[in-house]
Amino acid sequence: MTPPRPSEITPRAVYASRRQWLVRAGMAAAGAWGGSLVPGAAAAAPATAPRPQRLAALPAVASTLAGARTDEALTPYALVSGYNNFYEFSTDKEEPARLAARMRLRPWAVQVDGLVAKPQTLDIDDLLRLAPLEERIYRLRCVEGWSMVVPWIGYSLSALIERVQPLGSAKYVEFHSLADRETMPGVRSSVLLWPYVEGLRMDEARHPLTLLALGLYGEVLPPQNGAPVRVVVPWKYGFKSAKSILRIRFVERQPATAWNVAAPHEYGFYANVNPDVPHPRWSQATERRLGQGGIFAPRRPTLPFNGYAEQVGHLYAGMDLRRFY
Ligand SMILES: Nc1nc2c(c(=O)[nH]1)N[C@H]1C(S)=C(S)[C@@H](COP(=O)(O)O)O[C@H]1N2
Ligand SMILES: [Mo]
Image (cartoon, rainbow, N blue to C red; front, side, top):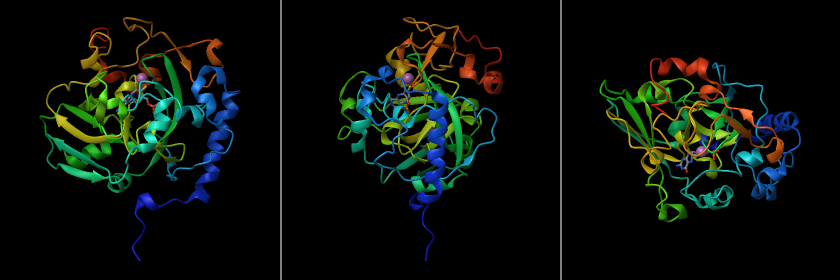
């Protein structure tokens, strides 16, 4: 008998109880869910009710990395998976949850190439086996002024980077998302150039907090959150965290990234969360935490580097963060 491939392992009984605990812990701390906050999401089941459909369980150990835990309340699963930015499907927040169900997630392979000694193509089973899966609770701050707290599952992108052995000439990493006209209606619109491309400087990509995410809340990623594999860069605005990645390319020059190309004066390449640098059309000084208190709840102050300054501030020593926004 051959051992099951990692993607086939679904020890539900073991993990379900833990997941329920996670959900309950989040809800208890979050208090009553402000249904008025996200009108469309109100149609979805509240996070306390059992979800009719469970995704495959993805066991992980709690990360011990500095910055990967928080006492803050988790954003309820219903909001994490019901209020999404995924422009390949729609510019609406509630539609991706419905439309992304059409995505074809298998087979899926990520091409890792460019300036590396060992270019390779890794399928999802390869990625699930590449390093031990950790649960990391990160804040995600959208440039639009809302934030959430998510128990992601994955491992440091650096594990994959070590595997392909970048050449000295590799200074940046590019992430290319799926752009499938058959299943993604938004790709027919010209709101962005497709595929969605994001990028990081090499030291940012290698920082241990930069997560290659394969799941959340104890399960594989819901399609609308960027299944089957995405990055999560917690100190940057959410748009840096590219979803549904097909290619990771190591390059010499700073990549042309989707939002930077679409509106260079509004969205910089670095996109570090910075309360002192307003977006040209609105302040970035405060944010609204999804699921907490509705639209009348006081906004909370946004922290430099989204609260991860201690871990990542040194990456930008000497840089003018008003110029490199
Ligand atoms: N491919 C792709 N990646 C993407 C986006 C997108 O539209 N397409 N939206 C970004 C933005 S603006 C945010 S805030 C986060 C939202 O992630 P979530 O839906 O899991 O909360 O995904 C980012 N990654
Ligand atoms: Mo965003």
